[in-house]
Image 1: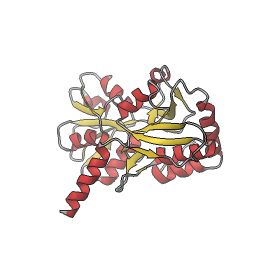
Image 2: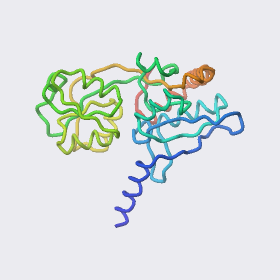
Image 3: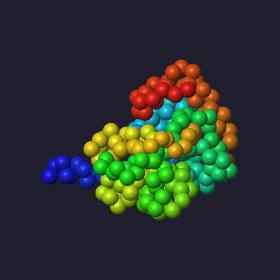
Length: 252
């Protein structure tokens, strides 16, 4: 019963939006709202006591400390992160956001913070799907408003099903409700590492993408501060250390 209660508490934490103060020094102007989706490990997740953690959180905290920014995290769904930054409801979005030409029309982006791409995930016992060409006529899961969903929608005869939470994307593949998922390579690898007997990645990576920190277009003066801090973190090796800690990769 105790184990079940803990699971229910953690589930509630993931589902309820919350605001958590950042680590930057206070009293240096306006408190900036940083939108994240803390159901997207290893980039952002809520730990067992409800604190947000992950690559994006550590990086944003380090940038805030370097740039003297006073921040607070707002945990919402990924689709709302994008819409909220585009409408300037939030000042910053730091949630594994791929830089695209369409998104650049409605928000600013920092210099790249990570690179990756989309992969295909299937059940461990699936022997029919070996790559992109095998997805025609199949039901494919992806996260709402993501570049994963965009990639899936461009494959002929795919029946796309989108879900607000990445956990639901994988759950529906494992349960057999969907034939496959298209998802971020590092998020997929993290899920499979936790569930090696349930799912696997098949075929080559489908896309090559770079992530950035999104900034509301009304806050143009904020962008050079973020980029200057990011350059320092790249130069002193902090960015590589965070990648090694959370993503197990070292990139240029």
